[in-house]
Amino acid sequence: MSIHTCEEQVEKILKLPLQLRLYNAIQEKRPFAIRCCDCSKEEGLAGSFARAYFTAPHLEDVESEEQPQVVLCVNRLHAVEEIEEVMTHEMVHAFDHCVAQKDLTECEPLACSEIRAAREAECRDNFHGGVGEVCRYVGMNPFDDSVPKEDENSINNICRWFKKRCARVNAARSVNAVFPGKGWNCVESVFEECYKDSHPFTTRNESGDKSKNVSK
Image (tube, rainbow, N blue to C red; front, side, top):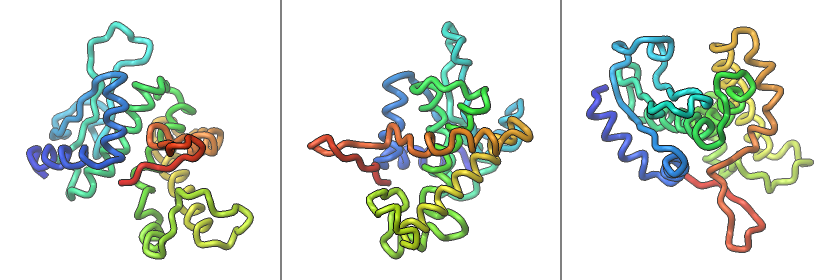
């Protein structure tokens, strides 16, 4: 994929409701950049294998003038659909670092961010080999908690279970790459709390007593 094609897709993606809301929430707190580049020319661990990555100075480095960046690796992206997925994933990391002030160099905060990122990206629609597509086809929303939890056999609960499983497995794999042997335990220790954390995607209705997720 060319850098130009990548940059064109970034502009289109930033017009989508979910991604625009996420982008604006980060920019209001701390300006960051989204950059398309050939990562075969990048040095360091992140540039060696990833389709995309987020880079920023450490939270304690308050005097740093380095701008946080989401880097999209055009040499490892082969379809425009991939750009939306990896860009959303890395922007969640950017939000958690820049806005929520999570230290992503620590296992549990990283696990929390990976759970949220997987939920909004890899596991948002087409998760578990097409299960997500089936859920959408039958009109079920795995984000919807309005279905009674006691109805364990409902399609909605089945969809919800698969979506959670997707987020759990993807997050554990990502964390394990940074903290070998610790990924699953770190993810499990924070999973329920972090999976439910929908900032900044949750909006309130006019009465202020219900919430809903921003759609794609």
